[in-house]
Image (cartoon, rainbow, N blue to C red; front, side):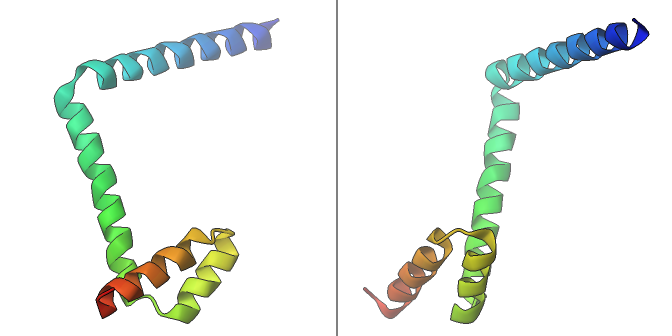
Length: 84
């Protein structure tokens, strides 16, 4: 009985916090801007790391993460560097 009450309280607290965070993100332009800038910084950092990544590292990273897009992005970046 005690475990069920604790579980219900934990669920209610989680829902309340989630609703508050969702409301805050939806209504606060400054917070939303900071989150978007943070996400853009992460993307920019990834692109910078792609600049120095060798083909071998790109292949291994794609295999480990099971993400072939890494190879495609690396090849596209190489073609951009050449001028195509």
